[in-house]
Length: 198
Ligand SMILES: Cc1cc2nc3c(=O)[nH]c(=O)nc-3n(C[C@H](O)[C@H](O)[C@H](O)COP(=O)(O)O)c2cc1C
Image 1 (cartoon, rainbow, N blue to C red):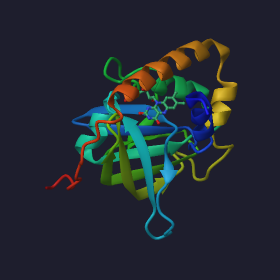
Image 2 (cartoon, rainbow, N blue to C red):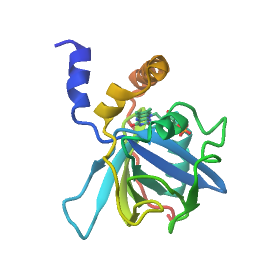
Image 3 (cartoon, rainbow, N blue to C red):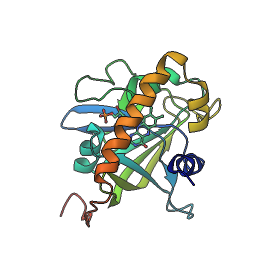
Image 4 (cartoon, rainbow, N blue to C red):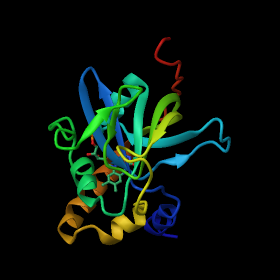
């Protein structure tokens, strides 16, 4: 089978499109991911995991603070995905125009989302090009709302329905990320997460 066919099959395993926010020393940031999944079957110990590439500004903010907020998004939140997922927070304050407050862990909680999970990192796995963060869910909510509304934005829905004007840029960003990952994916480090106090 061709690598592209394998990649398309793997895409069926991916998560909804989520917004990840983080904060370090007063700097707030947000990015988009479609690699988050449930990582626990125990209702009393809710956990999730997400892969963040090392070239993303968010990677260092999350790694260095051990906390992030994961937001499920609705199918009408295309503009937010464009604002957070197509440009890096290294060059612009992406959350300046996105209403939010700081949550219980000190990371930004977006007012408008389907639901949000405030997470503490409890372990990490290096993939060479990215880090898989395993998070304990410490607090849950629906942004500023009291309950979820609408439908959750899936990766397939985003790819099928994003505005045509964005598609070229999206494909170019993906191709650049794939080249970065291809060069680094075999250089895996044994990272031991000792927590932030160690
Ligand atoms: C639909 C979509 C899915 C994405 N999934 C991921 C992902 O799973 N992991 C990742 O590291 N970046 C992912 N990205 C790319 C980041 O969101 C993007 O590089 C962003 O600009 C990073 O911002 P930052 O540098 O401010 O952290 C995705 C982008 C989009 C639009």
